Length: 423
Image 1 (cartoon, one colour):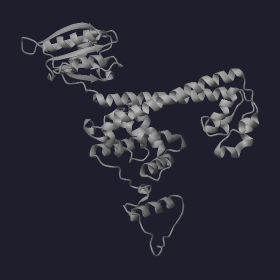
Image 2 (image 1 turned 90 degrees about the vertical axis):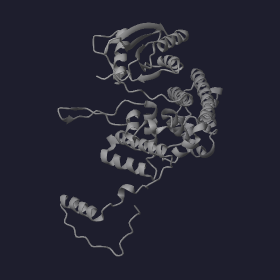
Image 3 (image 1 turned 60 degrees about the horizontal axis):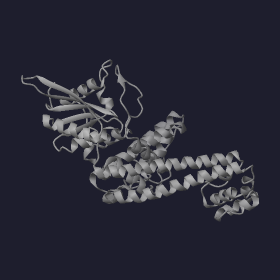
Image 4 (image 1 turned 180 degrees about the vertical axis):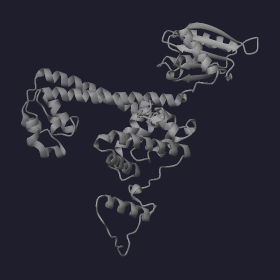
């Protein structure tokens, strides 16, 4: 095969050490010289490794995206200014079975990269990485806060307190007042129910029954701990919201475009920018973006037969939130919402999740178009799929369907004919 990168190095990355294999042109035509060294992963050692590669004239380096351990190596190499770094998916560079050592892995990576067989992963700019760190951490804290609320509900359930069976959520103003009163020592169900606020006062009898249980001091101790953890997480999430807003300020124009898409709010738009960088030039088509995200179907074909393969692996942070956006469109009078309802009817109740993934794919293609062309989303309407493209053909199809059901129909035009929706 042709050599694309003649001055190349491959790096096998681990937590405590890295193995570096360098492949350079030899003295004879077609000859390749190979050198292997091992370095510690301390920053000073990584800088020495980068200087050594620069002295050898290495211009291209490839390495696996091994968890988070590759980041310091990447920073040390890019700091030289003369080395192009390719961080590739580890699944794309598996070695031959039975030849698994750190040195052989580094040599194998170098050989793959010198022939141009590795596809570099997407590495967003530093300011986007800062935004991504904060959006991902915010999501983790929101998930942890939800778990704390579930733990609190479990404690109350074991005590026979069923406030969440009457109120929509435990953490409403009314529910919070009742729990704090229980922790403070109040046990009278009538007094606890009388703490209800607003529309909850219409359910005083049910609340009184829900607050009648076997709540003890041990339950109060656990509830106090869970509420304190919940409040701490809420404070941290609010602080992260401020940080995310600050780091998302340079992308305000793109976020304003994205929120015009049904189901996408400001938080979701911030996540989309954080995960993709907002630059669609890296994705030639919307299909490339969907495949990178993991919302495109995988290929599995053998002997001319195409078999079920499910979705591809991809960016779980983006794919999960796009599925949430798809569910958010379910009750909207929009084209994505109509598509979701249409697919649910087609797949049945058991195919709801499949329909949501399909609509998430559609929404991601819309995101690509909005960011690529720097334009707002244009709504086609909830009746988009009901508009007759060819009235005569649609009429013939419905008559044929009735014939298959055993009916003979005669069509009589109505006067005046109904107006057709604009295409």
